[in-house]
Length: 351
Image (cartoon, rainbow, N blue to C red; front, side, top):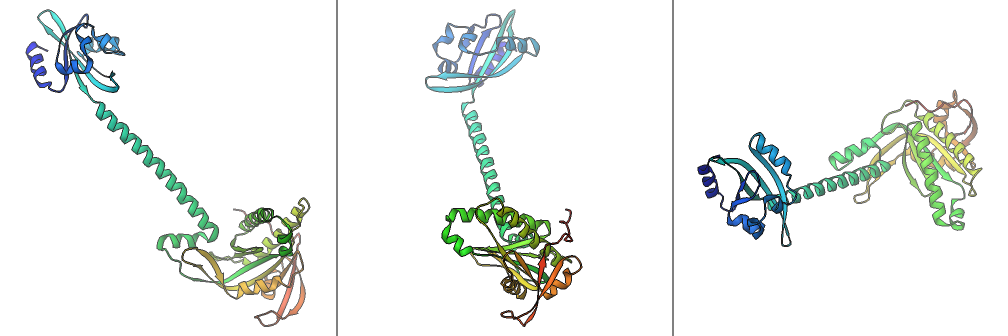
């Protein structure tokens, strides 16, 4: 770079720190007012490495010896303010004298803005993750109270169209002596044990394709054939009911509180839909639900009462015996059967 080019660059350098240095010693020959304003009076007496602490002199010399240029960023503390300075060194000569032109630009504000943008991006990313996590928690909660297909319809349209399901099978379970247990036991213990039992019931029902609809205190309702049709829905609830009782029998051997249940199984038509506006609840209504509720009343503790129509579908694979004709509140008198545990019951279907 010629001295004329240097002078032209100095003239354009308003608001930019400019200095002229000896190539060998890196002592200052010249610096403008902006440069002195940034780096102080020491510029006139000290060589460049003393002014630019942390400057990589070896890298500077390598760049000047290579393509004649070297750029870097340095940090300089002026009073209480930390400045970020972008520096550009360019090799030049005047006759036999080897020089270096130094141009400095204050990019502190740019770096501060970049830091703010990075911080904002991190905050947005963190908030996005939190929103996603909360969305997943809401979805998990809703899937606990309604089938997935119903949830997908609700998510897409905000409402759920009532749907007739016919036929399905309903399992209604009720605990014996629950009222007395609640009165004589610490409520937290009762709730904890109910939670353990219902969680186990959910896992058992899932093995056979049953969908838990709801719990009402000590009552547990699960169905097979909803929302997706299932040819062997009667066998699915029968297998589930037997394993519920097996689970309680094993549990009672190792727990101080004894849990005994009655179960009713019935098949028929139901209507399923979401009810409520602010507190969403998925529920089913229909004869099959009412009949299963009535049938469990005919059961002895840890026994399963079965509707005649369901019993016809179970005879070949399960052990059942006839209880006789019973008057069922809200229904015509009909045959009721008892389902027994038997080695003939099928294992859970493979998934």
